[in-house]
Amino acid sequence: MDGRRVALALGSGGARGYAHIGVIAELGDRGYEIAGVAGSSMGALVGGLHVAGSLDDFADWAKTLSQSGVLRLLDPAWRGPGFFRAEKVLDVVRELLGDVQIEKLGIPYTAVTTDLITGKSLWLQRGPLDAAIRASIAIPGMIAPYIADGRVLTDGGILDPLPVGPLAGANADVTIAVSLSGGDSDGTRYRPADSEPNAAAEWFNRLVRSTSALLETPTARSVLSRLGAAGDDEVDEGLAESEVNDDDEAAVAAMAPKLGSFEVMNRAFDVMQAALARHQLAAYPPDILIEVPRSSSRSLDFHRAADMIEVGRVLTEQALDSYDAQYGSDDDE
Image 1: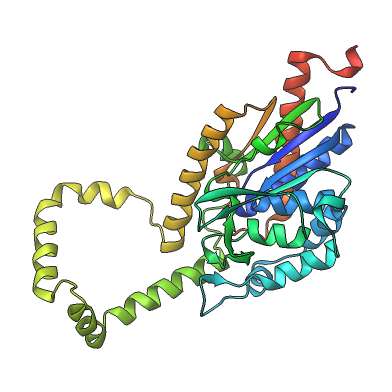
Image 2: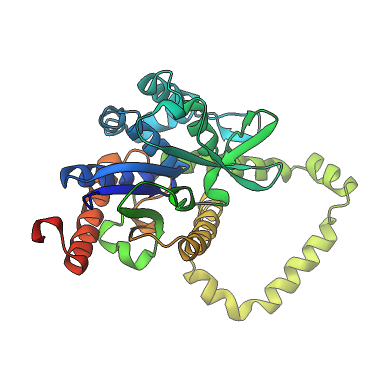
């Protein structure tokens, strides 16, 4: 081995996962050979496309997406266990991949998913590549789970947002992990404009607001009362007591960021994944860790492919330069 074989762990994090494309591109430009890939969620998608030889075509397509185009592709669902069907996106992925079996790929590949029935992380290393990707990207509450062999499979990032473990036996010189949960303070230079709206998140927030308004009708209140919900008098008393006790906190509350329902759910998921990623890194420390700041992109900013690909390139360049400076590059030998 010549020090150029890389085992690559690609983390979960929604649209920030476009940065994985930049990571892979920079590694290729520097002459590194990717000898194994493990991915969760968006990491499974990008990693799968790479090992199948279709990543460049996917990147070119992703760069053409606008916000309205993204919303049409997400295909909002009004029934079922997910707000989005996302089948249109998956159709594009399937067309790029073709009929590919994981075990026949030239590069060892693992898609990490979560079995909701057993409550355990599951490594998919055989079978159809498109099905493995579909299972790994099923974000809870957003995209319906994937049902296979009696298992209910959903987003790999629930339990394993940075899957370094599957690479423990990889025939590689260097293990590189790409986390999409980097600290916010590191991402100031990449932060999108605060005034920039997000069509998918706005759609989700409008849906929640509409549902909340529906629950405020007299009929809904009657139903809730029969189900044991608090009556109007109890609610009014609680609000009055809250107003009396919370006067001193009004100024503090006014300073808090205004987050919609989707932003609250998304932020909670990000915080959970960041904590889990730290545990994974402690158990399986990589040789190189590349951290993409959470603030570099919101999870549904799928119209920002070009920006995030460049972020991935820049961060990889910095990480490799630092590693070479510490351990010496092949050119110096």
